[in-house]
Length: 112
Picture 1: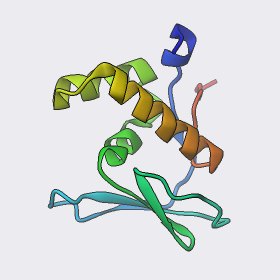
Picture 2: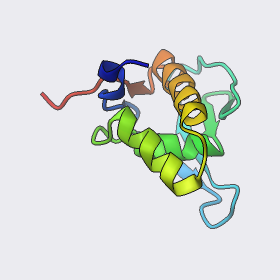
Picture 3: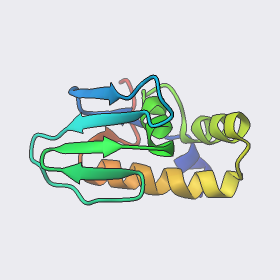
């Protein structure tokens, strides 16, 4: 992964989403789609016009606020959860690609 990619600041495009099971270890995020087109993946499942993001995908989703670079996101997760950088980088890249393909995030967002 090159340094330009690591400098991207992913940001959510959708406005309608919510947390579920926020007080439990099974915390998830539900994103409501306008077109209902998406594919299942390890970090999320599709149920009609709803995507349920689970596990590490919830943390990835939370960090897609337009203020964190991909490099920041990887570092934070590695430090907080004591996991391997390479694995987090691969998982995050796949997650961001899937979310961008579905039109849910802008991977290289800029405020100007």
